[in-house]
Image (tube, rainbow, N blue to C red; front, side, top):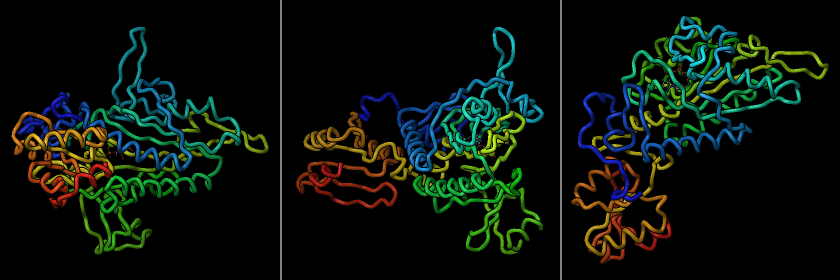
Length: 409
Ligand code: ATP
Ligand code: MG
């Protein structure tokens, strides 16, 4: 990316109505643009971060044999009526609209009903199972409060995975595989050390569902953890019975705020039964399909990463999700030529700050935009055939030989 050519601009101040740190920094650094409360546009840098998060999730799910699909965001009320969930009393965050020809539509808040309905076309025998399908998709929810930047959107990106099985054992086995995959995903996203699988309510036949909660001062959820954080539970399940179940004592628990980045549910027949998703077993008997569902809030994860790593100067991206790896600044004629040469070796990895502004402004923007390595090339560094490379996170600066830098790039 050449900063002289991109349309995005950094801002000194965040708009007044952007009170959340993640929203303010991402707006100032040119990653997102706010349409209205809880609704954001993703600009070139923001979209790259989203794509990097998606790639990590996709790689880990594909390893489990999951297949990627993309379902429609406009939803037919029919399957939702069969489970009772089209009702605004049941689900209070619906956005609904009307067809010109008459009749209602829903804007996808989630996809259990539509995918179960769709799978009736593809699942009829035990030979069709198990199967695992996931998507990255925009969800619409009429959230009462949307003041947390991209942590809580009225339109947001979710990864939702659905699994279909012939037996409870098979569902249990896959559920465990997803738990491990989620751990790898959150590790790779740079959230591993603060993200814990928690016991949550909403278990349907299992006693609990599980959430993945990242400990975070601005998180909207309250969780409790024991001394070595081997047991973490959500506030809503905190009771004497549950404490007994989990073998922990109230006195040893500490309370903290957290953001829910993902969750996993054993659904069993919750949706397959009302929607009539069945399979014929080896004896040709019709049986309900066992199901699980597994979400990750992709855009919320981006906001959580911002909140966890940002400092006073701006964003700080872990390398795995950063939109670019290097931020190149050439100073003086020879420095500018060399920066341009390095940029051309791999424009996909670099931002070239070739704007006609003072170096000090470029350095401030390099920090605001949060690219892992700032590379400065000047007459002085060139006299040692080197570039000055500064690590955004640690602030550490090193002189690195230009040749070594070029071969790394
Ligand atoms: P929450 O309790 O935060 O409202 P939820 O239980 O409604 O979450 P799910 O319906 O299970 O969440 O959605 C799966 C994931 O999508 C959540 O774990 C969360 O990371 C993310 N998510 C849910 N609602 C939003 C939202 N309004 N904006 C951004 N991400 C969201
Ligand atoms: Mg919700």
